[in-house]
Amino acid sequence: MHQHVPVTARQRVATTLLKWLGWSAILEPAPGKKFVAVGYPHTSNHDFLPVILWAWATGSKMNWVGKRELFTGLLGPVMLKLGGIPLDRRGSSNFVEAVAAMIREREEITLIIAAEGTRSRAEYWRSGFYYMALKANVPIGLGFVDWRKKEIGIGAYIQPTGDLEADFALLKVFYADKFGRDPSKQSPIALKPSS
Image 1 (cartoon, rainbow, N blue to C red):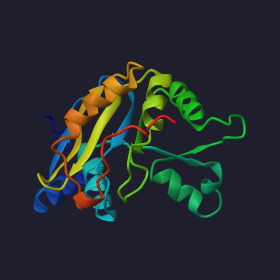
Image 2 (image 1 turned 180 degrees about the vertical axis):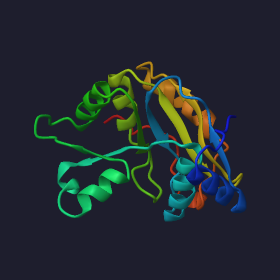
Image 3 (image 1 turned 135 degrees about the vertical axis):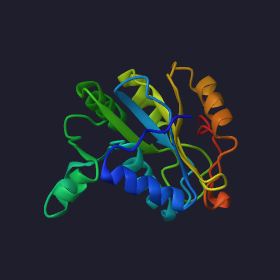
Image 4 (image 1 turned 90 degrees about the vertical axis):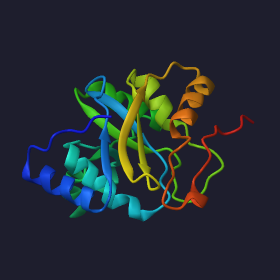
């Protein structure tokens, strides 16, 4: 487990705040300049503070994707500053393919995706993050907010193989000892049953 050495005032302050709150920041070195980071478990709005402090402490630049319409008007610059990337879906009816194409076009990106798609308990994970990484040929960073151990970060990376079930088995092993703030809302690491 590696931790970046703080080099800026913001990194020093964020690292101090995390330690004061009892958290440890984890960041395994990325295998490249581009990856999709899956976040799990996400059971509470309280995840926001440690996630932001982790990003500042480690100097990580996180991105997320939103509809182009979210970036208009007065909120546009704020959304961009928060790492938002507007996606014009007019040319593509397939969101996953549109995001994968955007990843391929960029030289560097850490794209954060919440695996569950909700803070409430779901019966399975959404697999969009997996196919985005697979189609863009980039690794998946295994991000977590573990309230039991008070650890937050990215602890490992996997390269998606196209064998969804085998790769999800690896995810289950990694996340087996990670617990959200409200474990009752934690979704099982399971695939949607095929109909």
